[in-house]
Length: 94
Image (cartoon, rainbow, N blue to C red; front, side, top):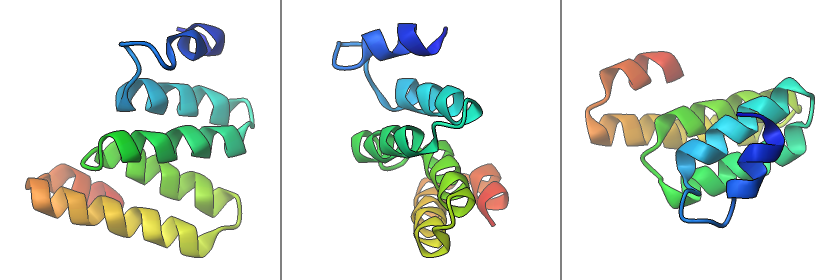
């Protein structure tokens, strides 16, 4: 799906963390990192255990020069991965 199609789904019954991550990745690919980070923050608010969103949020924050924010996102993602027993996510985040 393209950005406009995903944006139309925001606020509908199909809105969720996976949609927000997909939208954020497309936005980041176009250089719209601030909006992408807002959607990632919403994704982890909706689903705190969604480690892929935490990992991407950390990457974009680091790219934006927000080292402390990146560390915070990765720490939260790692905590969730450990809590969920998700060894793959643990390896990806560390």
